[in-house]
Image (tube, rainbow, N blue to C red; front, side):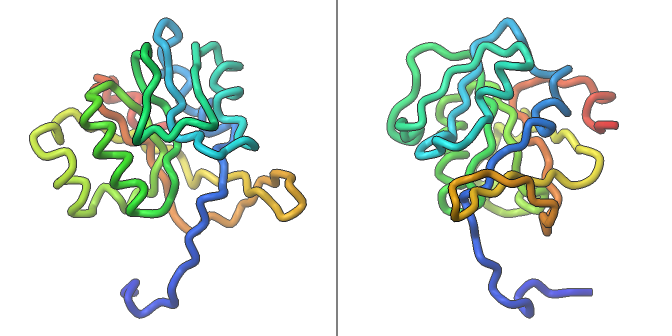
Length: 176
């Protein structure tokens, strides 16, 4: 058994982007008749997440200059996003999502669901959470020093899709 406290400190990188296949994995769940806000786009000018969701037939809004913790669009039905990896930022984003109380689907490290902060943030709304489990790891696109994105297949953790108020059928919670 390994103890993470015995491991060297991991570097945290928030400059990884969602690959197209990560959204294709859940295309059958994404509503095409709702306005989806891709909320975690602040300073993510290289991200193609909103473009990928649009290609799948979703009605997507986003703003790379909007800090979702401070401002939200006036009209949206749900959130689909991939929040930054850094825990303190992610906790603040999750708190904002609970405050907004809109349905969402977000990609996050599977270990987060075991953290105390998830239970503390969602409290009585914990009952509205569902987890979609992908087959294998989701690998991300990394912004390189030359400004290009490269698909990196070295992700050291497993991700899940954390869903809130989505009422997803049980058979759709385990992806093939």
